[in-house]
Image 1 (cartoon, rainbow, N blue to C red):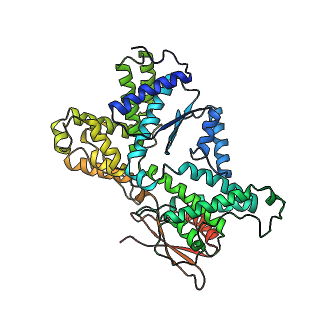
Image 2: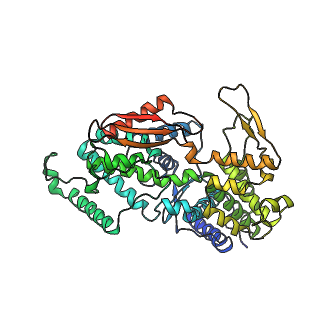
Image 3: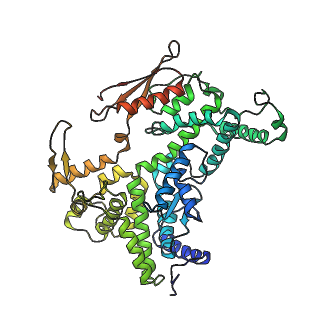
Amino acid sequence: MALLFSDAEWDFATLDRTYKAIEEIAVGELGLDVYPNQIEVISSEQMLDAYSSMAMPLMYSHWSFGKLFAREEALYRAGYTALAYEVVINSNPCISYLLEENSMTMQALVMAHAAFGHNHFFKNNYLFQQWTDAEGILDYLSFAKRYVSACEERYGRDEVERVLDSAHALMNEGVFRYRRPPRPSRERQREKLQARLRYEEEAYNELWRTLPAGSDVAPQPPVDDPDDIGTGEIKLPEENILYFLEKNSPTLRPWQREILRIVRTLAQYFYPQRQTKVMNEGCATFIHHTIMNRLYDKGMIGEGALLEFLHSHTSVVFQPGFDDRRFSGINPYALGYAMMADIKRIVEEPTAEDRDWFPSFAGTGDFMAVLRNAWANYRDESFIEQFLSPKLMRDFRLFALHDKAEGGAYRVTHIHDETGYRHTRATLAHLYDVGLNDPNIQVDRADLKSSRTLHLVHTPHRGVPLHSASMEQVRAHISHLWGHEVKIREAMAE
């Protein structure tokens, strides 16, 4: 079979030919289920721009995005950092950005990694199915960009930025963690869409441009819901602080409530990605490793391309030791890929230990069926808790430590024995539980009939209180959106 490419240079015909070969392996042989792909080749400056705008193809303007762009560009131009080979967006179609500076081998690798590995995970994992709308995210971003721009023109950039600053500071506290976000009925959605379309038609009418800025007949950004003005029944406690402020703040105007809705919609969109970093990157890395090796086995890429791919792959999955200056924690690519490869080993060539630990799939022979099930039904915490093997714990040299803040030394609590493996695995899994890492702050009550003071309660995890300086900054942002005094108290978990 002729090689797909023979040198580092690429053109669009070669990209198309290689994409089709990768697709045949990914879908035909591995059984991946993916959204339609949209591949875009971008420049280094466009990649930096993607970095600065939450890696989204459309985004409203905010000073923090420009600041991040300037920082990343300075580091890149000075040679302190490199650019990602790709950026992939959870949408339908799934958009994959490829860096134009990549060699053809790297273009093949990142198409396998992003357009099929990440794509399959986005489409099939239950968290993304439950919490995100891949069909509508691009249209919503387009609306958000136009809406924020219209608000800046009408109310002033400074006023809009103050609302966005406070909303961005509360993004991690602007998600629904334990229940589905409320969704309006189809009729209500249709009414909202018609209101937005009417606003856009009015906003582009030349006649409106002759009216004074304060005129009552000038087009207003649409009010999303008459019941959102804070007159409805307040249901407490509420974990989603941005949602509570959007619905119940006594001072926010309709356009400010819509901006809060935009920010918390983005926060909810990214929430599954925070819970699946190890699995998502592990899935994509395992897929690109499998596909690139399969291309070589079929005679479609040469030894030079294989060696270039392996050099990049081993760099991505490299895990520095704890005493290495490069160590910054466990590399999610390394752990994720190692677990996927280990599952393949257990399915195909299990040991007696593997059969004891994983009787449901050890030796079954179809490793892709096991992996597809894991990618669909687990998140990082549960995946590690269920699939991390003793062999992999030995390979990574994992053991459990215990320490107290007032103590002067660590104590090794569990090592490589039957009890130690299970405890170490559970301890590692808990490190990936977003619910234990994010502060548990909820709206407790609101005195709407008197002082209008808003009361929040923080339930510490393992007795760790909020950082005082950060707490005051966050309280200032909540107070700005609430319009009155805000109090936060600590409450020990039951």
